[in-house]
Amino acid sequence: MAKKTRTLTVRRVQSVEDRNRSQFLSLSRTGDDFKGFALFTPDPELEDNLGYFEYFDHWDTKNNSYVPCAGPDVCPYCRVNDRPSTRAKTLWLVEDEIKIFTLNWSVINEFADMYSEDEPILGHLFRIKRLDDRGKYRITPKTDSLTKKKLKEIMGSDELPDLEDITTANMQRSLEDIDVASVMEADEDDDDDEDEKPKARRGKEKEDDDDDNAGDTDEDLDDEDVTVAKVSKKNDEITVENEDDEEIVIGVGEFDIGDFKKGMEITVSTDYDDDEEEHTLGAWEEQGGEEEKEEEEDDDKKGDDLPKKIKNEEMTVTEVNAEDETLDLKSDDYEFTLFFVDEGEASEVDFGDYDEDDVVIVNAIKDDDGDMVATKIPEPKKAKKETAKKSSAKKKSTAKKKTAKKKAAAKR
Image (tube, helix red, strand yellow):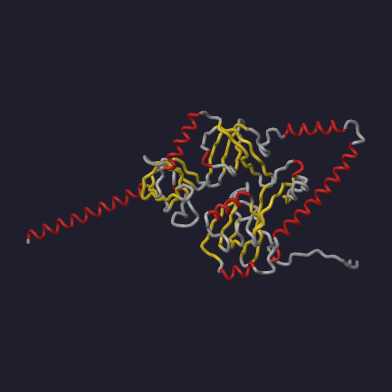
């Protein structure tokens, strides 16, 4: 059989390098990470900021993707009052290749906070790691940075991707797909018009769908009464339980994580992101009375009384949070959550070494957010006791030797 002649051929992947040639970085699974030099400044008002393009987009349920917003006068999502999310495309130098990584709202704000505190970003090395399936990331600054000459050479290259052009092209393709889908739906509606009472039938189906999803936690919560089961300051989120004992994780977004305490009964409304499967807090209020609020104010005052530095302080472990990588501690004078960073003497801590009610020796400093961060791995008190015993035994041995020498001298 004669081989067919093809006028068009599919571009094949010829090697592993080809497979990994994508211009875009995607951390799709928990634990995925990359290290790269940031080629941007997180400021949407800054001119000549070629490595940063911040924009609005919507979630397209039918095509399971994000669609950049075309503006309220044109965007089909804005016309149905769908509130857009904030994203930013950013450039990175990863293993000597220019890559594009899209920041979600929370990561944008983390970088913006760093920028507002005059922490260096442009040209500096960072490690970005995905922490969970809800779009939470950890940003870890490293000590390396590009030289001014190298940075200028990269940012002046004609081969630098145009982030606005890429985003605009994505928007145009997405809107064309939506137009095709709309035409197909219109044809189906025309066919339905031939049936009797089509509007009533469609309306009833919608009501049934609403009933099916009434208790679904994978949708927006609207004035839901819940109890706070867990507060994670590290991930900036709370875990709540509803009346059916279902646990729902909610990112606090623009709200202050310090306002939430374990056991609080609150009423919440959230926005649910289908793509990231993430609840973000839209509004909340506490159900408790003035007495509970006064207790919370007292707790806040305790936090304000924390010292700038703690050295060799004996404290009791009240809770081990291995998942959040924190220890809850208290003493006669202080009570706080001890945080750990990725670098330094305390970075190799093993949370399996601790149990509730353990007494440990704590060394920590207060950071700019008012949190206590470990400077050394907390040691069990018994380790200190053993050291003290050895020191005491050594002193006794030395004293005995001195006494023996005195006695020998006296005999002479």
